Every structure is written in C-alpha cells, then in structure tokens.
Length: 300
Image 1 (tube, helix red, strand yellow):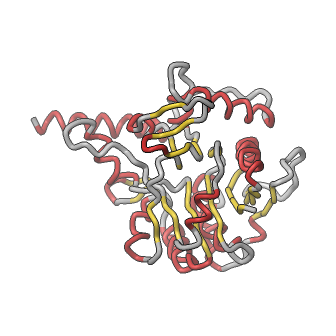
Image 2 (cartoon, helix red, strand yellow; image 1 turned 90 degrees about the horizontal axis):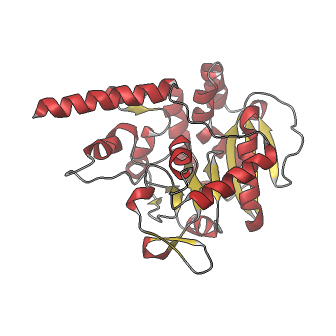
C-alpha cells in the first residue's frame, strides 16, 4: 500500500477524487485534509480517507489555522508540512501531491527512494539557458527551484517539516523582491539545512506546462509515453499552465489531458476547463513580465 495525501476544499474534491482513482490501480491510498467543512461527501472513491482541521492538535498547526483561516489558498499551502507531520505518526513513508496531480504509471519508484532518503523534491526544470528565454532562467530565482505541488517524506523528515511549518507560519506571501513565494520558496533551503534530501531528476515526475517543452517525447508501440533517456511518465501536474498547453489538440500530451478530463467528469459531470485571464495572480504575472521586458530593453 502506498500512502498519499493532499489538501482540498469541498469545491475541488472532484480533482482529489480523480487523483485517488489514478493511484488506486497501484494500491495507493489518499488521505485528504478537508479545510472548509467537517462533513462527509457522498460518492468518494474507496481508497480515500478524510481528515479535518479539528484533527490537527499541535501548537503550530493551531496557530497556522488561526492566522490563515480567512484565506483558503494560504491555509492549504501553509498546512502541508503540518498535515505531513501528523500522518507520519502512522506511516513510514508518505507522498504529498496537490489535488490537480494525476498518475499514469506505478509510483513505486517514489517509495523505493524514501527507504534511503528522508525527503524527495522535484525541480521545476524551468529553462536555464542564459542565451535565450532568459525570463525562465530568472524565474528559477523568483518562484523557487522546487515545485511544492510534490514532496515525499519518511519519518526522518520530522525536523525539516517542523522548520517548514515555522516558515509557513512566519509568512505565506508572493513577494519577489523579498524572496518569498508562498510555501514554495522555502524549499530552496531544505537540501542545505537537512541531510538525506534527494533532488528527484526523474523527468517523468511532475511533468507540467512549465517544463514539457524541454523534453524529447516519444510514444512506444503500446502507446505509453516515455520521456528522454527512457523515463516513463509517472505523473502530470495539471495546474492552469498545464491545462492550457495540453488542451490543444496538437499537443503531444493531449491524450493524457483527455484522460484526465474524462476522469474529472466522473465526479463533476459539467466540468469544462476555461482559462481565466483575469485572476489576480495571472494579472500580476503579466505585469511582472512587462516590467522584466522593459528592464531588458533599457539594458540595451
């Protein structure tokens, strides 16, 4: 049995249920921290367990809940290390993924690595070429080297999770000039501060709209997907950027997108992906990119 966990509001449980369905063939069990209501939802997959804010009794968890109770996004991000630490009381190894992740192959490789590593991190794998696409090069230093939509831990990670919890209590904020990006930027320090941390460079893990262009992709005769150097596709992170890119019919990952959407509709029949150009964060990204472009032009 493989132990996974995620954090969700009730309105996004259909994504968590799709995630649960994707790990079910591999004997994966999904623990969901439901942060907005203490009631059971009908129709959940059999491999799902619910937890609630009232289950988190430790001091730092209570303080985080009190600080971010009026902002569901910040609360979800800040409670990742708290929930992981809570679940490690009963699990030897555990993987957190955002609820918009979907697995296509056996996650056994992740848990095998957690026998010998206390923490697994996945890089964003943004482009890092200083000769072109320099905006992506600089993005590494603005939003973080590692994607906080995935982290694997075992029982030896408790100290690191406690430190991360304290960072999240300190501040959950997007502020490039201060070096902050919600819960994510803090992860840059984890391989420096703690031992037995593995940076997972398996390119089939946490494939997403921000890194797929840099990979050479090929389909085998049985139509399964492999990535350069024969990395099998393990899981895709279907964040907004991924949905936008992979929804295009000419995208190499369009079949995987279709599979994901069909699974979402098993739990939310009317689901239809519509890109929003007017979210506060999306607008801020465009503004910051414009500022970056102007500064580059002024440099000559």
